[in-house]
Amino acid sequence: MTDAPTVAAGAPHEGETRRDFLLIATSAVGAVGTALAIWPLIHQMNPAADVLALSSTEVDLSPIEVGQSITVVWRGKPVFIRRRTAKEIARAKADDASDLPDPQPDSERVQKPEWLILVGVCTHLGCIPLGQRATEPRGDFGGWFCPCHGSHYDTSGRIRKGPAPENLAVPKYVFVTDTKIKIG
Amino acid sequence: MTSPTWNNPVVKWIEYRLPVFSFTQDHLIDYPTPKNLNYWWNFGSLAGITLTIMIVTGIVLAMHYTPHVDYAFESVERIMRDVNYGWLIRYVHMNGGSMFFAVVYIHIFRGLYYGSYKAPREMLWIIGIIILLTMMATAFLGYVLPWGQMSFWAATVITNMFSAFPLIGEPIVTWLWGGFSVDNPTLNRFFSLHYLLPFVIFALVFLHLWALHVHHSNNPLGIDTKGPQDTIPFHPYYTIKDLFGLGVFMLVFLGFVFFAPNFFVEPDNYIKANPMQTPTHIVPEWYLTPFYAILRAITFDIWFIPAKLIGVIAMFGSVLILVLVPWLDTSKVRSARYRPIYKQVYWFFLIDCIVLGWVGFNSPDAMFMGAVSFLRIGQVATAYYFLHLLVVLPVLGKLERPRSPPESISAAVTKDSDTVTEAA
Ligand code: HEM
Ligand code: FES
Image (cartoon, rainbow over all chains, first blue to last red; front, side):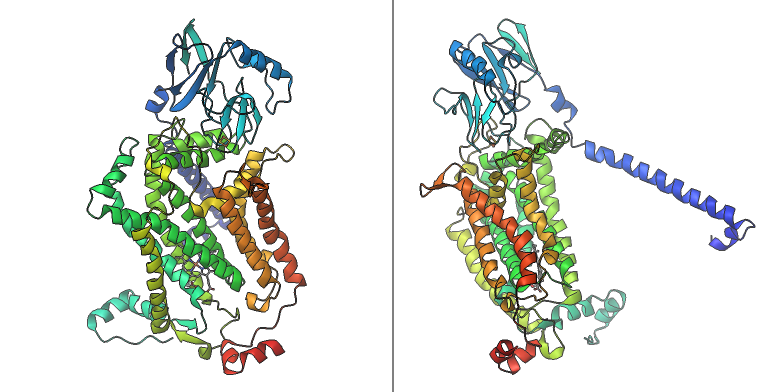
């Protein structure tokens, strides 16, 4: 198994290219094989099938009064459901025209203006903004206020002031009936 | 150093096959150490001992801890109330984390004062910074395990930092969580990794000491040892000195454990995690507050880069930049004793770091003495942090006129040291 016999076997150049080819081919197969073997070790950390299976929630809206908010759990996160007052809707529409850090008209953020449905997670670093209860601070724009680093959201859940870069996310939802939604 | 020859046949048999006896002799007993090390040199061995304490108490805690969202908090309370000496073991581990950082921070600032990071000890320094980073990761992961309110929200806020990166950010966060929020899969993997990383640190410390033993310790004069007249054997001189330091350290450490065991923790962490409610005031552990202050100091976009991303980059950058310190500091003289200006800016830098730590404790909107917001103080302190490292260090090395250090460690004491240093 020493180098000498093969290399000395008449055509040293041929032998060398053959070896180079074998070396490169072996390394390439080895590298691809290693990558394939590593992938399961990385992907196992992504959400598992049972976690993904839990990804929709139904909510009955009938007990919610005008001006009231409730918080439901969807995928382990709070979802804010606020039945907005006429004043809040008007304010959200009027604010369409102001200088928004993440511009989006109120009409694009709701399916029915009365029902504002948002993922209740601050887009800065993930705290839960205050403002669901009437007794909690709602910030300078009447929506929500995140106490962690001071982000203010308006009555459409749009970011208006503070370090958060984006509006509160609107989850995917459908009205199953007039008083029932399915989130996710 | 020539090792003694052993006569015991068992020792000889082993030594021939695996030279552990001569290794111990060379590296722990005869090991030549500068004879002028002061007490700031105790902190390396204290760090090593603290690491050992953390590993031992941690393994014991893991025998009683349950990494599940429904049981984690209760299992920790059970350790505190029912497990024999559980309260002691947990309090030692809990306060040990703070002690570990205190000791390592002093160890690092020792290095900064005496220029221990300069050639040929750059690798030693770089491995040290990697140790620091790994320690931070370990401490963060461990803090999540008791599953209190602070645990949960620290985990949420820190993992969310990765969402600052465009495109890859969200997938990374989901991958870290193993779900769509911090939840049971997250707790499980954090436990697994919290168990692993201290052993990685152990291996890194081994490399750190290997690099140390190639060029040996620096010393308060910052000059190379010139021969046997400059050194003394590690044992018994430094074993006894380290042991004395350990006694003093233990008084402080156990003082906290027995008399103020919750001094360093937030009371909110004795409330079980509630994913639906964020505590009004989230603060990290004291040893991470300086970096938290840097994260929050950035409230403005730069061009198209959002503030959130810059904050995250500044925070990680503030640690990673330390890797470059051996090259940022352009002065040839190691010890601050012979650098009249550096000696002063060193203290500014230390105070700046303490200010950052204090700002990190306070809400950014709060006002200091009614005059200036903590946000503003944090911004000034962050600017100075980077200014010191990126501008002051390189420029000072070129402009400052250092005094000449003595020719050798022994010369500094055999002649009148003052005349040597002053005359030169
Ligand atoms: C687990 C953490 C650490 C342990 C157990 C550890 C241990 C040690 C020990 C035992 C020494 C020799 C004794 C001494 O000079 O104090 C040493 C030296 C040193 N360490 Fe660390 N260390 C740790 C972390 C760090 C960190 C985070 C840094 C910062 C970058 C660092 C930088 C240095 C330097 C520059 C030296 C050489 C010091 C000199 O001789 O002047 N170490 N370390
Ligand atoms: S997490 Fe809401 S402002 Fe930072």
